[in-house]
Length: 44
Image (tube, rainbow, N blue to C red; front, side):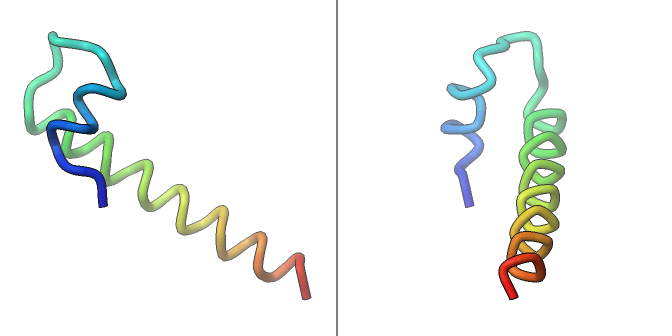
């Protein structure tokens, strides 16, 4: 998982709070898991 600091670097938005950055990071991780599962199903 990306660290909070690395996520902030990637977002490049100093106006976001730590809590907002964590929520964005977690949402993108969930999205990535969904995309990966869909890819695995389509690969079969």
